[in-house]
Each structure stands twice: as C-alpha cells, then as structure tokens.
Image (cartoon, rainbow, N blue to C red; front, side, top):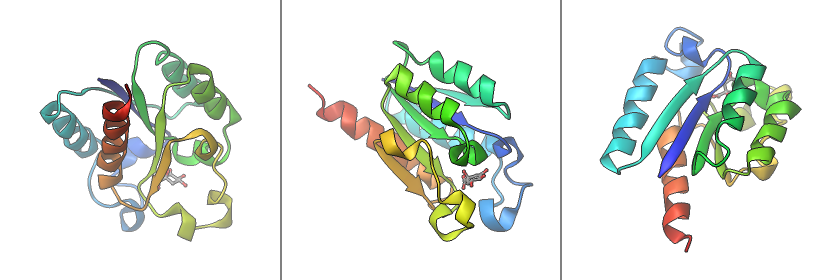
Length: 146
Ligand code: DQA
C-alpha cells in the first residue's frame, strides 16, 4: 500500500508556531512518527509539505494512479481552497482530512472545510496522533476492500 501524507502552509513551522495550539513537536517529528508507524505495517509513505496552493495541487495530481490513499492537512487552505478540493476529487484517491487542533472549537472562519465533503473522514483535535489515526482509517478500508 502506498500513501501520500500532505501538509499545507505553515505546518513546516510546527514546534515554533503557536505551540499552545499545535504543540511542541516539529514537522520532522511528525514525519518520523508517521513514517515509523507506516514502516512497521509495510506501508510506503511519501511526505510532502508546501506553503503554496499550486504546489499542493500539483502533488495531489501526482497521486493519480500512483497512490492508494492520501492523508491531508490542508491547513489554512482547508477553509479557502476550491482548487485543492477539486484536485482531490479529480484524482479520486480515498483521503482522510486531518487537523492537529480541534478546529470545531475555534474561530468561525475555521468551521468551513472545502475538503470535508468528499473525505472518508475528518480527524480533528488529536494532535499529531491524528495522522496515525488517519493512516489506520486508510489501512482498514484497504483491508476491507475486495
Ligand atoms: C490546522 C487548522 C487550520 O485552521 C489552520 O489554518 C492550520 C492548521 C490544524 O492542523 O489544526 O494551519 O489545519
């Protein structure tokens, strides 16, 4: 099984950025944590982070016929980007939306998600463990499909 783990803008600043909301672990810690979990289960995980909407769209497009699942935290683009939502629909690769913080309990402008509608599930407020939870959801789905 091959999955893409995609992170949007400012997630490269994890550990520095608003640690009271996003915690003290860094983006490298996140990659280590998720890649370790995937390696133990024989999942090939490819990581990508960008601060640019077009870069994220290009990478999502590269999942077409190339990845079995996507874990995506579009960060602020969650709430604004029809382009990212369209790219996810275009490639038709099953995906789980992740947010480190509990977006449901935050500002009104974070209550809109353009990617939630077509996601298998949205995992929010589980800190970095949310990415592991998302991989588990993809894995269970893969194991259940004929
Ligand atoms: C986030 C929540 C978004 O609202 C915010 O813009 C982010 C991170 C999260 O992981 O909690 O950058 O997606």
